[in-house]
Length: 268
Image (cartoon, rainbow, N blue to C red; front, side):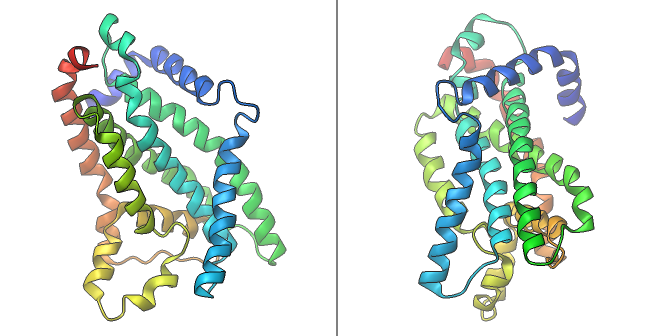
């Protein structure tokens, strides 16, 4: 699978670049603030949840943890919600132009990656300011951040393959995804860190292990471990298994996409 996927990408790289550029240009077309909405949305979410956690629960989560969690989650959220339409939203191309359909989710993911890298730069500036204000600085492990972003992107590509294929065949997919993403959000340490909930898991270790099998739990925690010097990554077996799940998911989702893509032009 990886060989055919990357060979297709190499052979049609110019088309991928053009499709990615079109996706980026159209994302905030006609808006006043444009790209700044990508920064304002997660910032507003972070502020709201910081206040919510302090008022309702009385226990604060560090600002830097929430900031990192929100930006990482937004990257996957955009991949899932936007990825649903990367086939059905390009009906003219699918019906009239002959090209590998796999390029559509790949170009969407590439455009989403470029967008995330821009927002990540802003996040790093904000994070550096917060840490300096607290008398600290970025972790030396931040140099490994590109590897984590690449791995996170492969996970997002796998999700885009799944939701784009499903949306062509089942138009109720957007409603199902909306519900699933809401549940997934609260089951992922986005607005809190693992230490915030570990005390709730002491009486049910099986629930804790099940929770850590969530790939996004490992990805978000890894972002924090690479950027915050006081943050650590829990190398337990469920966390490692959960962090490894994107690889088989990418293989399975790619094969499903290739199997059903021949009927796309008849259904979009």
